[in-house]
Length: 472
Image 1: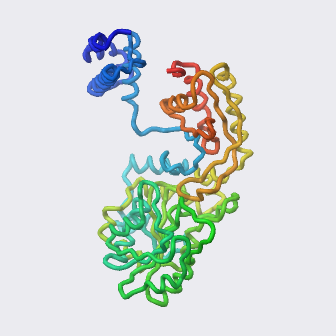
Image 2: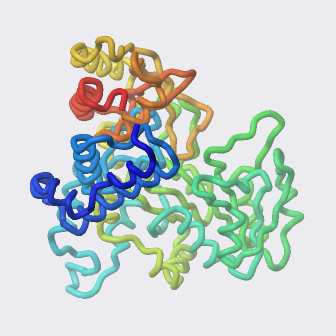
Image 3: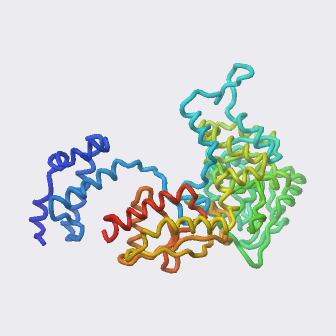
């Protein structure tokens, strides 16, 4: 190995490297400015390795340098936002884009992107209209609510509701419901931002109706229930029902709000899961406001839906925050497509990918794994082995954290590299493959790998194990 100074002197000049990579730059139509940035970054990275005496990845000749710089240029030209194959087995994966949209929603998205639309134009009167009317009647039909509003996510829904109802006033919440969910979203923090004053009642594990009643003062504006999402307490616990709070609210003239988080329109117990509270149940209980996400169990785009009593929802609509939190035309277009499927539950279970994956029988998944294994026989050799295994998938999206769905997947065992190296290599593929490591085994869970994913999965795995990636 050359010494440090020799290696530093051998680093290529940026302009010379760009000239040598001319064919690659022209083939991929890489802008020169971007190509120059990529080449400089790659050379700087190698220089840092040399200075730190990390020599294992330092190119030692012209051919190795060309391969490194070419790979970096192709990589830097790829979009940052890209498709991945989700083999993690989490249906509503909050880090991998949450819910997938139905096919018909894509045509609506395309229409909204390439054509003018009636976003805020009333086709009947020929005058300015409201974007919210495009979905409000559908939401009310499906939930039984008197009125509805959609904002850009459920945190925004909670914020604008509290700001409207309880700014400068007190909101009573059970201590056991003051949770933090993904992205450091904490109920007390959102409440403070809304200008409301939090009043905690009960103990961490048990709250009673009399706890709420004792906490009510002349400055109390709201009693809030929060679905604890991805947190669950077991054992000696109790919480007050929405119906009980509604009764107390009617007696004391205080509004009641329920934040369902990952709201659902169907009973999940039919799939062997515990019943989650549905939006319809919450509305039927008589609460004044219900908030929930559009991109989790509902299976739609990112959005926060607010439903409830008309007089309260109308006040929320008039809040100036509504302008800042409003949804765009793409959310509206795709949300309407998803909502319309719920007029026929059987259709929704088939058309909405989130519901289809949750409800898919293990036998169907097993057959998909078997098709994959038949198509990967040419890959298996001294490099790796594939084995069908039973899996337990998760719903995700903050729903039912301790319950799993039985299914099937593939265990991939590399023969020449360790599992962590393989997992890292899979994430660098196009498209990247995201699996999970459990008990020192690498698993691809096929509940979240669709039929259309299988061909691409076979192709990228073939390239990985039979290409240059293994051992790199």
